[in-house]
Image 1: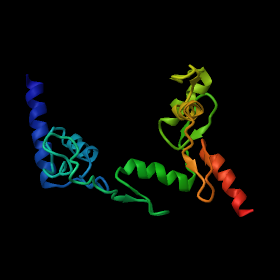
Image 2 (image 1 turned 135 degrees about the vertical axis):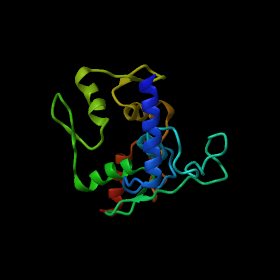
Image 3 (image 1 turned 90 degrees about the vertical axis):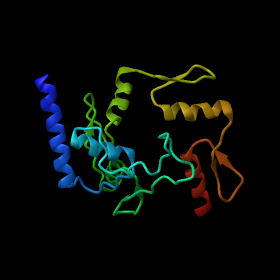
Image 4 (image 1 turned 30 degrees about the horizontal axis):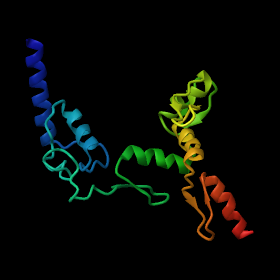
Length: 182
């Protein structure tokens, strides 16, 4: 009972203090739900600090089709690409810097994204969770399954801009397009 009252008092005190002293956590634009949740975690309460934080949603909480979703406020200083999430920008910047801070515990291979070593781990343990619904063949990665399924569907989404020729894989199109420049 005492712990509950103490926790409530602490949450109210922190919330009041934060309202009087705005917290600066970098460029938070408060238009995305995750940034609003971040601020609410800082206060330790479920209270929204900004009543307009879900202005792009309808009263039911669903995205409002009439109101466009906010555009990316975080932009890459290298190429200008914009992102709505700061984490996506941080990961993107690694494509420019070459930084790969995440490593496989089995072989030491490095990765840009946090989840990539776990996905890569499947190659060491032989796990193949993605199965083709047409022939039953299994794959380690979802992208490999998707590319394989194009054999069955005949889908060729990569179209040459100069000829009426299509390809199942993007690198086949790139290889083909080099023939136009030679």
